[in-house]
Image (cartoon, rainbow, N blue to C red; front, side, top):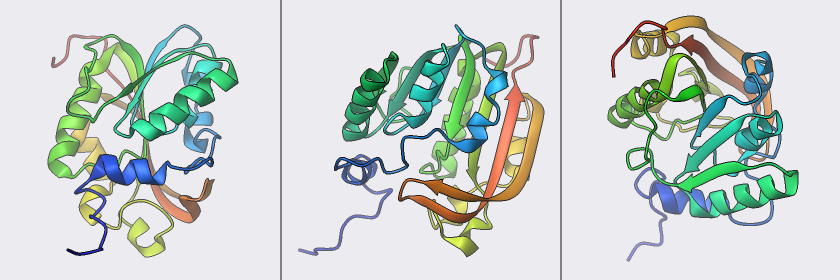
Length: 217
């Protein structure tokens, strides 16, 4: 029997549970900078869904701004820490333990969906995930997404070392062609998010709005 640990995407729940073990926060407790810089997109009372939010850094920040937040992650260890983090921060977040395919996605009810570094998904899973994210948005709802660009393979300062899991602006524009693209750009930045995202990084950010007219289900 081999002592080699399973590849991350062969055992995603186990991998992330191991990463979230211990007292520290794998990605820190501060919200993602791309999200914070777009704080004016959100209004108190809006319903927001945070996709695969791990230990809760983004969902807790949004709840602290007066939003009604739901969040989920595949790792029960991470979600338990997120619940404690929310309680210690004096906010409420509706957390769930689930993978992306099994999650009970809402339909046309979210004012915003936030997806920060959800790059565990291979192309087939990503297609399903993106479709569910769009489906969750109400007409006029916003998608706020950030991920690593393909150039991140050169930096290796975070994210999966697998090109098919990374983004390009062209990929995102095509994937969300039924939305109105408000912002889409590839850029580089210095990240300091816990022990996992550290250093110069190649990124792709997207803000898109579901049209008010009736779109796909």
